[in-house]
Image 1 (spheres, helix red, strand yellow):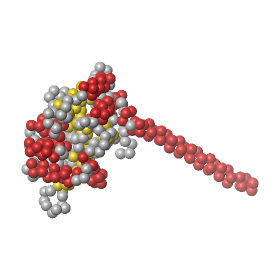
Image 2 (cartoon, rainbow, N blue to C red):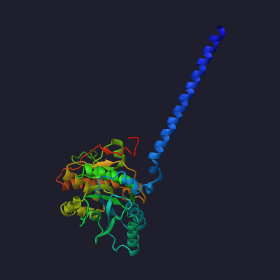
Image 3 (tube, rainbow, N blue to C red):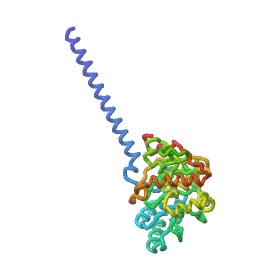
Image 4 (cartoon, rainbow, N blue to C red):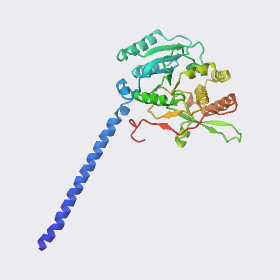
Length: 328
């Protein structure tokens, strides 16, 4: 009897150890499985934008309305070649319009390369149309000049040194389709009431860190944003000419002017889309000293042009593709 009573605790202890071992193995298997799933889902992000081809974009395609890309460039032919080489693989792109403001026409070798690239990247007989929008004057307003013969309502405005994966672009396009009167983009900014000088009705420009800290924005910059093609005509023909003159003279704030215009017409805030941005060029004017002060000056001058009324509306909404971002 005493021997049996001694064996029972030993057997119970062994069974408990076996149960713990099984639980640990199951937990490890679950962790490994989850890691494999997450790695597979994020593989395209880890490999970079070059792996995001037209086939992956097709999975995110909305019913086959398409969009035009409006690309601003200035004497950066290598960056232009990289951008065109990528965007001509995106299935939603109907046409690419290169805003050309250089004094000399585009080199024949550059035109030949870009046209050859567009043809090489064609799918199922569809080739993205490639056009240079020529301008005699060097002005930042050129990027929003009205374009004749556009086949799409949607325009994706982008700089030549900014690249997005095709599936990311398709998702942003689908968001724009749900709110076509406003701007939908990837680079949010904010305007704030300026209380530093004790003046009423004065505003200051808030960069990325103010958006990150507060979660609030009122603009999406046109370096990476969708908007309706009608706004090109309104910008060129109906926006106060004094705003365009200011932009030409100071070489800044055309993106703020477009944000004002769209907000004033639509009466709605923009929509910020979360997406991976690949910047392939060097830093621009935003890295120069006094940038925020100059942008704040633009805000206040434009408000005066709008009769003292600030048209920009703040928002805390962020559109996230839950198929791409598991932690949302």
